[in-house]
Structure formats: structure tokens, C-alpha cells
Length: 388
Image 1 (cartoon, rainbow, N blue to C red):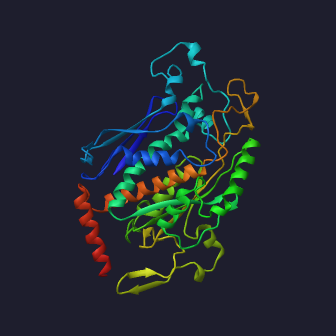
Image 2 (image 1 turned 60 degrees about the vertical axis):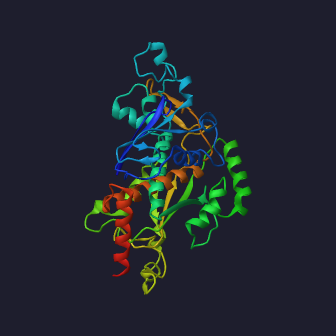
Image 3 (image 1 turned 45 degrees about the vertical axis):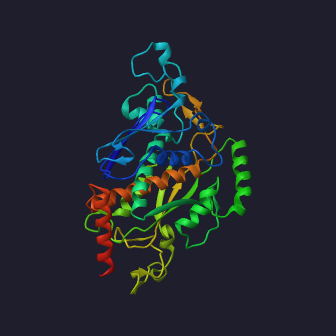
């Protein structure tokens, strides 16, 4: 199972093509639209979210509500394109149009300058349009398909914010996916402890008034994953490494940890490793889950716990200084659109990206031409593990 995305932030549409989804998976546009709507929610969002109400169109790979094994094409129309039709036109246009919304003042923290240097662009909009977080729309759409597949295999996933702009969010250690969905899933801040919500909203409002932005830490948990996904035999087959790479590839994400994560470096080994236990009904399990469900690059059957750190959105309404690429003179960086925070929305992106990697790993490991074949293969594998 693999996918590609295409499209510019202010272009006519965003597209994803997914190959390798088993035939026979029930799938509708609404399954995907639910996730797209979640991505556009959350306290602190503004501008673009009022313009766009993302709806997907499935143009291949699904017939009569079921996948048919051929590539699935997903399209999301950018409604704002009507205001950018000439500026983002594929055909050549007059010079005066080319100068409209031309960007020569790169924004600190963005891809603008480095992308322009790499691809020899005089207009840095060519970089902005693709490097924009708008691209994550299609990764959420792909993730929605992956989540549908995982649900059929009784694998569930959810996310919540555990640190909001430096403020720790209270939550119990042994959280289930269902717990997260019933609490953080209903919160516009994606937090477990609603008693902290009012304080956080006031904090976000203050940050917005100051023309600044905040980031934070998001935790995603996956349940029902069988032991043995991934492999220790080569570095590039380790599943935790694949998940880490996928999470860091999300716009503004700068770090990943599993289980205790960086805290493990501060503790002795006796307080880090998870003791192995066995019972007749459950087989092999662990007495704790400090390692976040991974050992040797492989799932160990425990809940997968992965956290990603998102830096503050780099576009500031009180801009930092930059350099004009034409004149080389100092200049305040330009502002496209910005929010004080996009942390709850970023959690939705992270959740769907992690779901995609897990679904890809499952389709790689098991026979998966059809959903019936995949279900049987996974069930047979789980039975074998239980008898080990």
C-alpha cells in the first residue's frame, strides 16, 4: 500500500492516489469527510477554515461503496481558487499578473528561502504553495481510508494534546483509545482534562493578541496491533522508525518519542524496561508499557504510544525580520494567514498519518488482495501467536 499527494495551497484542487488497498473494503466519501472536518476544527483556528469546508470526491477505485483493488483517487476542491485563478494559472499569463502576490520576502521558519534557493525560483510563492500545511488535507484523507481498514481488523487509534504551549495537560497513565475519544475527542482543545480548558482558551487568546503563536506535544495511541509488526533484521524495516519518519514529515513537527521517550534517558534500566508476563487467556504481555509498545523495532502487542512535538506556527502577525531576495535589504517577513495555534488540528493529522503507516505495514506483512483474505490472514497470525 502506497500513496502520493499533489496540489498547491491555492490551486484548483488537492489530490491523493492510493494503491494497494484491498478489494472489498466498505468506503464512502462521508468516511473521509468526517476526518477532514476534524482537521479543520479546534480552538484557535481562523482565516482559511472559514473559507474552506473540505469535501472529498472519490473518482476511482471504489464502486458501489466498496474498494475494487485498483488505485483510489481522492480529490478535494479548493473553494478559494476562484480568487487565485489567474495568479495560480497553469498556462502562461501576463507579467502584471505574475507580479500579483509575488513573494520575495521569505518567512523565518518556513521553507520559502531554502526552497527558492534549491529550485532557482525568483517568486517564492512556488515554494509556499506546496510546502503549506494545506497539503496535510490529503494525508488526512488517506489516513481516513487507512483507519477504515484498521477498524475492520479491530485496530483503533486516537490522539490527544498532552502539552499545550508549555502547559502540561493532566491525564491518567493507562488511557484507552475509547477514553481519549470520549474526552479529548469532544474537546475543541483535544485535551483529556476539561477543567483546564478555560485557562487554555484564555492563554490562546492572549497569544493571539500578542501576535504570537504556540506549539505543543500530541500523543497518539493505537490499540489492537498484533505483536511482530516491523522487523529487527534491517534498519529500514523497523516500524517505530517508519512511524517516527512519518510524524516528523508533518508540517511543523520537530521530534518524536515512544512510551517514556526522552525520559528514559534520565532513569535507570530497572525503571524503563517492561517485565514479561504470561497467562492462559492472554498469552505473553507486559506488566507495564514504558517502551510504548515497541521492542527491537517491532510491536510487542501492547498499546502503541507515540508523541510528536509541534513547533509554534512560524507565520507571526508581529513578523520577525527577514531579507528581501531581490534587494537583499532587511524587511519584516510577509504574512499569508496564521492562527495562534493549530495543535488540535495537528493531532488529527498525526493520528491519520500514524494510522496510514500501520495500515501499510499490515498490508505488507499479510496477504491483502481482498479484505476477506486479509482478515483471515490476521486472524490466523493472532492464533499462532496465542499458541506460542
